[in-house]
Length: 297
Ligand SMILES: Nc1ncnc2c1ncn2[C@@H]1O[C@H](COP(=O)(O)OP(=O)(O)OP(=O)(O)O)[C@@H](O)[C@H]1O
Ligand SMILES: [Mg+2]
Image (cartoon, rainbow, N blue to C red; front, top):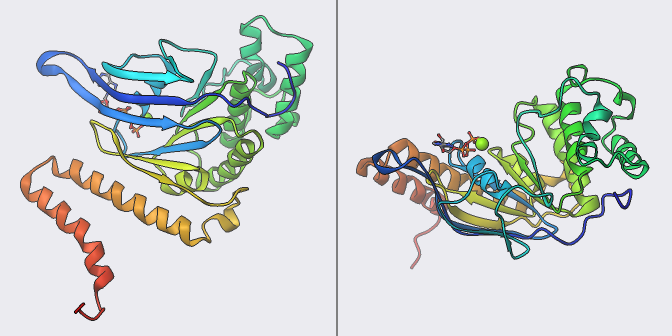
C-alpha cells in the first residue's frame, strides 16, 4: 500500500462491446444479455439502473470475470478481461464480511491473503477505519454492527485493495430508508475524494440520480442499454440540495418513463394488445403536455 489517501490512479476504463450472455443450450437456452454495449468511463461514477431481474448481476459477473460472455468482448484499459483480477473489486448486495473476524480483521483480509500484513497496510487499515467512521468498532464482530456500519466496513475492506475499478451490485439494498440515504451521502463523499472509477448497479431511481455522473438505463431481459443520460448535478452531492434542482427532476422523469416502458413490456409478455397499450402510454405524456394549449396553426 503506497499512500494513505483515497487518490486513485487514472485507470479502469471498461468497454463492453456487443456482449451476449446465454445460459443452457438448445431449446432450454436462455439469453439474459443481448448485444449489449457500454463504457464505464475512467474516474467517473457510472450507475446502471434496470428492472429487477433484467440481467444486471449477470453483467457484473461478466465484468468481474467470474463468467465469460457467450459472444462479444469486455476490456479494461484495452486488455481483455479473462478472469478475476486485482484491478477490479466487486462489492455484493449481501454482506460478505466474515462473521468470525473483527472489523479490523475483515478490513485487513485482502492484504493478509496476499501475505502483506505490513506496517504500511496496517496504517492504511487505520486510515480507512477512520474514513468510514468505525474506529471505535475495530474490535467488534459484524453481528455487533448495524446494517449501515456493516456496509461501511465492507467499503473499507474493498478500498484497502486499491482497485482501479470498484464495482458495486445494489450494495445498500435491504437497508432502512434513513440508513440508505446516509449511505448515499457517505459513499458519494468517498467517491468525491478519490474519483476512482466506480460502477454502481441499482433498481432505486433516487439512489441512481443522487450518485451518478452517468446513468445507464437498461431494457428488460434480454438486457441491453436503453439510454445513457449524463447527470450534471454539482458535487459534493448533499441530500438537502441535490434533488432541489430542475435537472435532477428532468433526469428522474426521463429515466422513470423509460423504466416504466420496460416494465410494461415485461408485463405484457410481448402480446400485440399489450404492446399497443404500452405505445399509447408512452404517447400519453406528450398529449398531457399539450393539454390545455391552443392548437397550433
Ligand atoms: N446461471 C444461470 N442460469 C440460468 N439463468 C440464469 C443464470 N443466472 C441468471 N439467470 C437468469 O438471468 C436473469 C437475470 O438475472 P440477474 O440476477 O442478472 O438479474 P438482475 O437484474 O441482477 O436482478 P435483480 O435486480 O433482482 O438483482 C434471471 O431471469 C435469471 O433467472
Ligand atoms: Mg441483481
